[in-house]
Image (cartoon, rainbow, N blue to C red; front, side):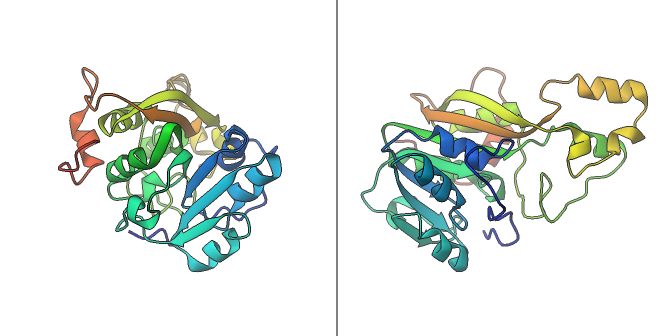
Length: 255
């Protein structure tokens, strides 16, 4: 698995920027926390977090140049391909109060495998912060209704995305892999401000109105905080086929 071509968080962001997961997570990190930033890019999260409070960050990044930039703000940055690496081997003996996956899981062939690895390196009381695209966003659905599903260089349909999630599928995947959701929010974006532009205007008024009244219709990205749970049993009625798809190594038992 390679994240080449994925969004690198080197656009200008500040601690008070709204509508972006990176500043949001930087504000949510508790003081003095030990943090692992998976897919850290050039270290924007570390720059923002350390400007706000004392904290210690490690990072993992596939791009050597981005990793070198990130080292200005991180204790340690390891260059690795997440699809073929084991977190416990990359960072032996380390435990984290916070692990952050900001727009990472959708790029992985088996995000469930990564979730199980994260569970094993969290310190007692540790939390997982996740952001990822919402495939049920009104802009995507509207394009489908007009007969299009067009990948783009960036955004919700970034050409490097391998997995797609709604609220239910994300919750099921977390549950199956040993996490309990503590907070489930999202970034709201009007469709006309997104990469989908005026696509709603191409729908019949009744269809457009129905689409926009759907739950989560304008949630562009999900923002989730989760903690290790006691059970890996999916809730009644959950879609096992989707959750299993997120884990191509079902023999990896939860610890």
